[in-house]
Amino acid sequence: MKPIPERCPLFVRHHAGLQPALALFGVCAIILAGCGRPAAPVAAAPVEVGIVTLEQRPAALTKELPGRTNAYRLAEVRARVDGIVLKRHFTEGADVTEGQVLYQIETAPYEAALASARATQARADANLQLTAQSEKRQSDLFAIKAISQQDYDNVVAQLRVAEADAASAAAAVKVAQINLDYTAVRAPIAGRVGRSQVTEGAYVRQAEATLLTTIQQLDPIYLDMTEANAEVLRMKERIAQGTVGDLQPAQVSVTLVLEDGRTYPEKGVMQFLDATVTPTTGSVALRALVPNPRQELLPGMFVRGRLEGAIMPRAILVPQVAVFRDARGEPYVFLVGEGDKIEQRSIKAGQTIGDQWLVESGLAAGERIVVEGTQKVRSGATVRPVPLAVTQSKS
Image 1 (cartoon, rainbow, N blue to C red):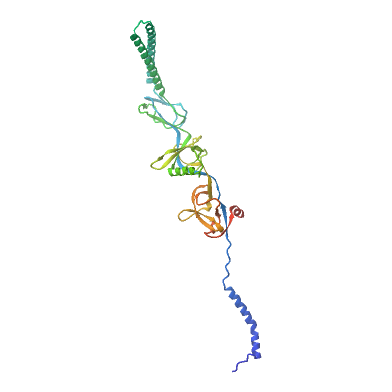
Image 2: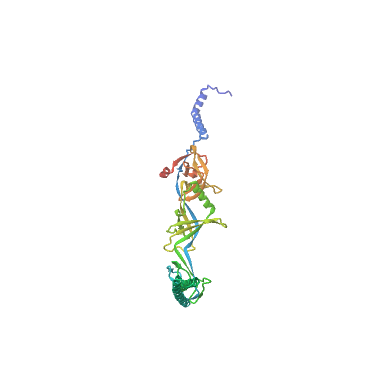
C-alpha cells in the first residue's frame, strides 16, 4: 500500500482538526510542570520580644534569719534568810510590780535578833559617851601636867575602842534590820511571775539560796538569731568595697514572721552582733529588741527575723520572669546583643527583692534583657526588640 502523500488534501484536513486539542494539552502540561517545582524560600520576619534595659539604682537588702524570743529581764527569786514560808501573796502567771511582796517568811527570830542588836548598840553608845567624858577630863589634866603621857594615851585608846564598839553595834543593828526585811520576799523587777517552787510551810535556806519563783519582763522582748560567719564576713567586705552602704546595728530594723506565717505588727531594732564565733556551728549570735506591748510574744517562741536597712546604692535588678535555670540549676538570661541577636548569658543571682532578682555578677547597666517572648527565641537568632512598656501597651 502506498503512503499517503503529505500534501494530500485529506491528510491535511485530518491534522487540521487535531491542532486545537494538541495546543490545549501543551498548556496543561506546562501548568502541571510548574506546580511540581518547589517554591522559592521566603525570609522569616524577626520575632518581636519585649525587653528591659538594665540600669543601676539603689536597692534595699533584706535577710531572714531563724531565732527565738527571750525575756528582756529574767529574775530568779531566791530565799535570802532561813525560815518557814508563812504566806504566798501572788497568783501564778500574773503580772507583778517591782517591790511587790511575793512571800512572807517567819519573822519572830529576826525580830528578836534585831532587838538584841539594838540593846548591844545602846550599851556601846553608853560606854562611848562615858569614855568620851573621861577622855575630856584626862585631857584637861594632861594639859597642866597633872597626869603622865602614858595615862593620857591609855584614855585615848579606850575612847577609840569605845567608838569602834559603837560602830560595830550600829552595823549589827543594820544587819539585823536587813534580815528582818528579807523575810518579806519582794519582786526585784516588774514582769510576769511564773510557777511557785515552794508552798506555805516549806523551810527555805539562805545557804542553798532556795529558788522560790521566777519573774520575766516581757515588754520589750529579745529576739536572738544566728548567722553564718561567712555571711557576716561577706557583708563586711561589701561595706568595705562600697557595694553596700556603711551600716550600724541601730540602723537595722527587724520584722518578725511568726510560726503561723503572720507578720508581727511591731518592728524591732538590732542591738548588737556578737564578737565571738560559735566553734561547733561557725555562726555568730545577733540580738534584736522588739516592743511587746500586748505580750503576744512569749519567751522561747520560734520566729523568723527579717533584717532590713542595708542599702546597695548601685544594684542591678532583673525581673524574675526573665531568669531561667539550666540543667545544673545555674541561672541565665537572654540578652539582645549587637545586631539584635540573642545571647544566652549565665549570671550569679543573689536574693529576691520583690518580683526581681538581685544580680551579683554577669550583667551590667545598659544591657538589654528579654522579658517577654523568651519561649520564641534561641541563641544567635535575630529579633526585633521592643521596650517592655510598648509591648505591654500592645497587649
